[in-house]
Length: 104
Length: 230
Image 1 (cartoon, rainbow over the protein chains, first blue to last red):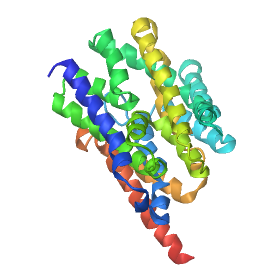
Image 2 (tube, helix red, strand yellow; image 1 turned 180 degrees about the vertical axis):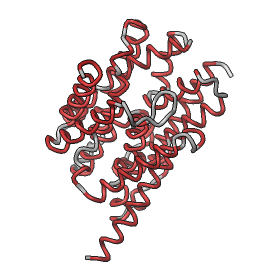
Image 3 (cartoon, chains in turn purple, cyan; image 1 turned 135 degrees about the horizontal axis):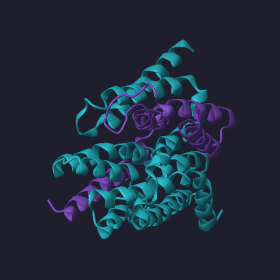
Image 4 (cartoon, one colour; image 1 turned 60 degrees about the horizontal axis):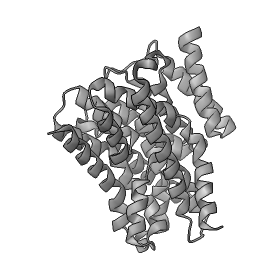
């Protein structure tokens, strides 16, 4: 398959995952119970992106010793809980990560 | 509020989330060229796919020599989270004309979903979907321009900075309010554990959706239990 066909197919499948539910689901299908469960969607999905990015290295191996990302993420999380600020969370995480890899 | 003001509100609300998109876009541009895609192909990926996670997965698997079928199905698996986003926002879009649904779908990305989900829940104005368009369009502009910069700058960006760490940080920042609720903390832990443990064992990078479903089932069980105890 050429690079162009690959890009087009990947684009198509990405778009369809975004469009299909918006196109198919009708308002009448919602009730309070479904709304309640769907309110957990961010908590259910984002950790699946966060955790492997922190704990698994580029080689696909689990990495817990000598991994500054873990401490940096914990600091960011604490700052996030205390400040409730998105910017403060991101900055504190990056700042502590750089501190850990360049200074410590 | 008129349409433009809602659109503007979307832009303002999403802007803090755009800070990590800048290094993410740069990294993508640099990596794609490094792996052997042409500048035009790299730009086309950002324009056609317009999804950071999908594009990085594409690069990762492509450089590892995976077959096209594996790459496409992996991109689909990583993107299956959009099915859930779509299900969540569809309630607010169901009265719109098809053409609007087609346009808005293109902008249904993580960051825009995260901020507009809150706005859509709290506001009942009929033009509230402009918020999602504002957030999505902002991200679009940043993503395209940083991809372009990444292609141009290439190897001038030091790998040592570890800018890829900005990606999990963005998602962490999106959960700051959920860390205060017990059910959410349990759901977060379950999903994170399933994803980490399944990373190497669940085929086609489907660990994202497997972990998400495990998290949602946990939420379902816990919310039923709490209701019974009340």
